Image 1 (tube, helix red, strand yellow):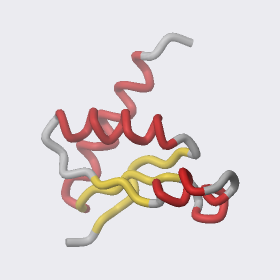
Image 2 (cartoon, helix red, strand yellow):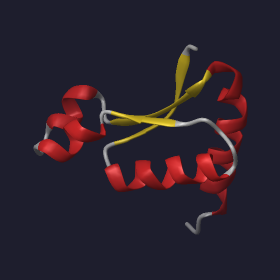
Image 3 (cartoon, one colour):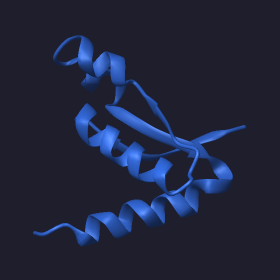
Length: 75
């Protein structure tokens, strides 16, 4: 199973919220690089941030969910 990145952030808390939203919608989502973000300040920059990945065949669904949530947030 090949994974693709659908979301990245430097905030582990934000990544956990997105992960929870995707899993609640039935998407097989995984979080990567979270430990480096929590280990020491600046490590997250070195790894490119905390990323959420999903199987390739769920990429479009995951992106739609993320984008719809971002447009629902107040400015």
